[in-house]
Every structure is written in structure tokens, then in C-alpha cells.
Image 1 (cartoon, one colour):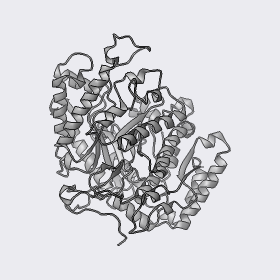
Image 2 (cartoon, one colour; image 1 turned 45 degrees about the vertical axis):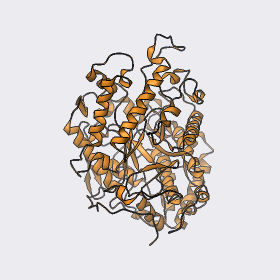
Image 3 (cartoon, helix red, strand yellow; image 1 turned 90 degrees about the vertical axis):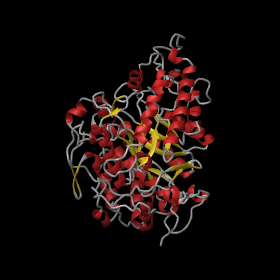
Image 4 (tube, helix red, strand yellow; image 1 turned 180 degrees about the vertical axis):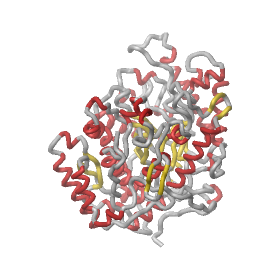
Length: 571
């Protein structure tokens, strides 16, 4: 839990022309997968840096009680605060469940009948996100047994048998009906159809699709029908069918599976799976699942606690195997869920960074290394965003998992690992834009509305100021590496060599060589107030004029329905 008065996170410096270019990247139409990377309609590279907020729908609907938040220019609700804080820290994708989480709150009450209250909450989230330049990765259904889950569809269809969600014709048709309802929903605030709204980054077909294979021991007796190899074929057929149907219903948005990313028995990646064999029996087959023609990009999850795999090096092995497989498919790869639990009894708040930090640092190191090498790992979305202290205390007390897994804006892991990594990714996106050999989307096929960042403030930061900050960070990191507890709270930032050298001058075009010559990464400790203050001071007097890292509430901005932003030309 954190107090209300948390330290605003200072903007990691960018020169004026980079700020202008970043503003261009924050705007635009639909994002697509092209040549193993994400690009916008003008072929500017888009690197997803994001956060998971699985119960944002409940918060927006008032199901989870929350407090108003004072932002720079007025009072805001928790949805606005979340989006404003994300945008201010260069987090450009928010993954959320586009359905209920708790059994008492559902988007689809029964087959074909929807809660208009819940739908209007989703309308509100989408409309607010578009104002802040934050895009949404939305799940369509949940594997796990709660509201809007596969269990509900099976019950509605009256189906019986093992894993019938993936095979029963009536159940499958109900899900297709739901797809139609979602993509053709007209937002009651801005009048956009969801399928025409570029605020949606992509769809997850399902959150963590699995067969119902939960054996008590390995090897599994043949009587466990859901653990048989043929169940993986059922899941694959469902992915092929539903992704094709969704792509036809909504050709504007990308689709991914939404799975953990396990490898099936006999797969080339099976040895990478966690555990003692259970993961290969879940029905997932990472390579085949994401090779499906209508799947636009590959994604995986990482759950050290759930999988009882606490070796930090496992994360690197897991990521590199999946990245290599995605590269072989010619598709970009991203981590769309990962987290590390920290229970208060294991060391209270003081040790959150030392326990969670190594896991987060490893994942974001992999991202930065991939970006430096123009590798296949193109984005990371952490789990999960902490609404504290602006949601009801009883909600957190009643959800032990929520307390253990949340990352709040005041946490050292957020300030010192996540936010700097997002800033670095934003710079790299600028440095590689426009993408060579990429063809811009023709005017007739472009989005008719834009995802615009409104009036989020930027400020000029000189190269000298940035160099001073980098020097302070490097010095802090050298001192911190002498002690294990300081090392556990290290972060990654651009090196003392000026990271702006990776950003092409105004009006120039990047090349494949420039994309791999971006600033390297280094480590520095910022988890103590003194260290954080030294970095803030190094940024110069202009830091006192910083308007937000906590967020700024935006007024609705008028949007031209046919205008489009193009690559920054310096004019």
C-alpha cells in the first residue's frame, strides 16, 4: 500500500525534435503487424509498452468503489488517472478484460443479452483512452471459471463433454455471436463502432485458452481425456476458426491468441516449458497456434509463482525461445502478461523492489537487447497496475492476489525499471521510423478517427542535461552493484553515451544499421530517495517546471474525421 503523496516521476530527457516526433507517434490510426514489427498507418514503428488492468471495467462501472484523484488541472476518476499516468510515462498499451472478472459482474448476462451498464463502462474506457493516446488490448472471453468465461458459454449451449467449448457447434456459434456484438458495438459517447476505433490495439481471442487438464501427478493416466494429445488439435481448430471469423468481422484490428505460450508434446520448444511435464498437456501449442493465418502476432505470458519456476534465468530462456519461434513465423512477439508476487509477510513494502526487481529487470533487459538488435521481441506489458490508494481498502483486503501482484506508480520497480524502459522504447520507435520498405495505408482504408494525446505536456531537455542525468545514474549503479540488496533494485536506462544518437535528425530516414546502433543499457539504483533526488537534480532547473508524471486530466479535443498525421518531417 502506498500513501497519497507520492513523488512524481521525472521525465527522462528528450530533445525538442524528439518530443515532436513522439507526439506524432502517439497519434494515428490502426496499428498493424508488418515485416515482423508493429507499425502505424504511416509506417512509423510502434513499440508496445504497457500495463495490465484486468478489472478496469469494474472500476469504470463503479462495481469497485474508488476515490476521486486530484490531477494537475482538476479532479479525475481512477480511469482517467490510470490513463493519464500511463501516457505521462510512455506506456502506450493497456491490456484489459473486455468482460467481467468477478462472477457478480458480467458483460454478457446470458446468451445474447448484455449489460448496457457494463457496455457503457467499456465505451467510457475506450473514449478516455483515445484522448490520452493509449491503446487497448482487449480479451474477448476468459478461460477461467468466472464471469464471461468459457464455462458460461457451455452452460448456455447446454453442451456436455470434455472441452466442448472448443468443439460443440452451438457453443462455438454463441461465441461468434459475441464477436459480432463486440465489433459492431457503437460507442455511446463518441458514436464509433468498435471495429472502426483505432484506440483498440488488438484482440485476444481468449485469456489463456486451455484444455481442462489439471492432473495430480505425471505421467497422466489415459483416463484424463482432456490431457490427451487430441485436445491440442481441438484448441488449434478453434483458434483457426475463430481468428478467421474475427478477421472477417473486423479486418481493421490485429488478433493474437492470448495464451501463456506452452509447447505441446513433441514440439521443438517442449524442453523450455516450466514444470515437470504438465505444461505440454494444456492443449496449447505456441508455434502452431500463432502460425494460424489470421493471427497477426505472437504473445506469451510469464508466471514464476503460478508455475513454481523461480529461477530468474528461466525468464531469459523462455523469452528467447518464443522470440526465435516468432521470428521464424515472420511475426512480431510480445510478452503480454508477466508478474511476480510479493506477499507482505515476506518482507513488507521495503523489500518489494528487491524481491520483484530481478524478475522485472530481466524481462525489460530482454526487451532492450531485442530493440538494440532489432530482434523479434517488440513489446512488454506487465501485470498488474496498482489502483491503490484510490480504490476501496476492502477490495484490496479481500483480494490477496491483488495485493501481492500489483505494481503501483510509487513503487521503485515502476519508477526505476518500467518507466525508463518505456521511455527508451519510445525513443527507439522514433529512431526507426519510418520503417524502410513499408507501404503506408491508402487514404481510403485509413481510420476515420485518430488516437490523439490531447495536450500532454512536453519540455525541452538539452543533451547536456541528459548527459548529466546519465552520469549520475551510472555512478549510482556502480555503487549499488557492490551490495546485493542494492543490486536487486537496479534499473535499466540508456547508457552514458548519449541515447539521442540513436534518434535520426529531423527529416531523415532511419536504416537497418541505425536501428541496431541505439544506446546500450546500463544499471543504476534509484530505490532510495537520495538516489532519486540526485537524478532529479541532475536534470537541471527545468525539472522543476515538469508538469506531470502522475498524469494530467485532458479535456475532450475536437478531432478531424479525415485528417491523418504523417512521419515527422521537421517542417
